[in-house]
Length: 106
Length: 119
Image 1: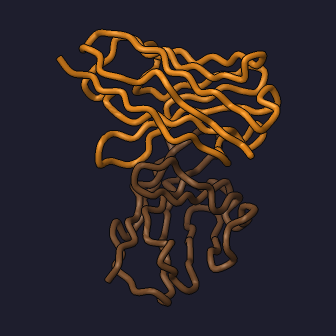
Image 2 (image 1 turned 90 degrees about the vertical axis):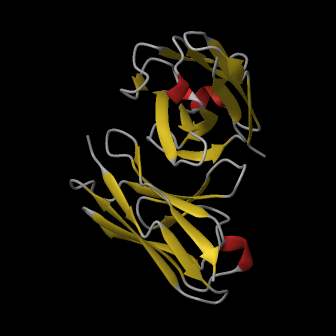
């Protein structure tokens, strides 16, 4: 099974900061990676798929990069609505989520 | 607007059964694969099961294989998850997700339904 290691588990930042979250796969998954945002009491929201393709309606301050085993989600300028938990998910023949990164207010 | 509404959760004793439902609207339900994902209290997301648009291809996570059955009624635009032999570690919020075509990720999710397994 493909394992996903996501870090950091918690990230403290201020509005306007540039933040990055990393996800590492236990084997190559090409670019078959999605990123989700989740807020308390809500289902996940798709942000990015195919490692770097922005889902329709998602602000351009979100971007994704990487291929193979290492991937990054970057928020270029953190906004108040962005404080949430973020998950990566590989979809190369199966599903595995990363452990999640909680982005909290510094 | 795509909407997914889960129902059927509740309190059940260990060893019991529940059937979860997910009603889809705002899209052609028969054209999409569907998924169930769960989240134990205070924990991360765990994929549970996948069904293709036609219902002919089905996958289960090892943690639920043999105890769970996914099905899809395209005429009623409803996805189901039959949970049997429930254990305490099945306690979670269960979310249904619309597949991105037949790919193994989801572009829309419901608000979830809570399953609590306790005596």
